[in-house]
Picture (cartoon, rainbow, N blue to C red):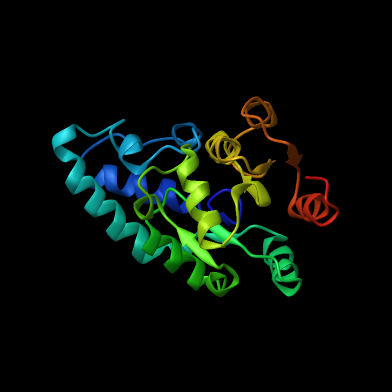
Length: 206
């Protein structure tokens, strides 16, 4: 979701740094978020001691959940492509390292929630990405076998989860990770824009 459909990096980084400032710690830079698939806890622990983690989570979520609308956006071309896919009867699911409820709130805010048949956060599955179980669970909710699906994502963890489940995969270049990392993870195709992604999917290139 993040880095593919939703551009939430400015919001996440701002919320993270407001949390750290409130707890008396040095702030983070964009490079600290560039390891796609990094969990909230892993990022917080770059500055916080383990005993501060529970409070850090609480403050971060309070800030992020109440202010994300200020600096989060839908990537250009995403809404149009998703609308067309829905119009043609494609089944769509989200698998994300956000909590499921938070992912649904964000998508609802941007009038995207009803476009997806299933939303699976890290807390909705026993083993989230890069484990294949995340993609397998999403496919199950769509009543499909993973081999019938296309996994689209901006980081290697998406690709690894998809490949592990037997899905076809497309890496996208408008997130925080580059072509080399996505190709090394095994992406079947690389998309440079949402328009390019729509062509790859619609023309059966993957």
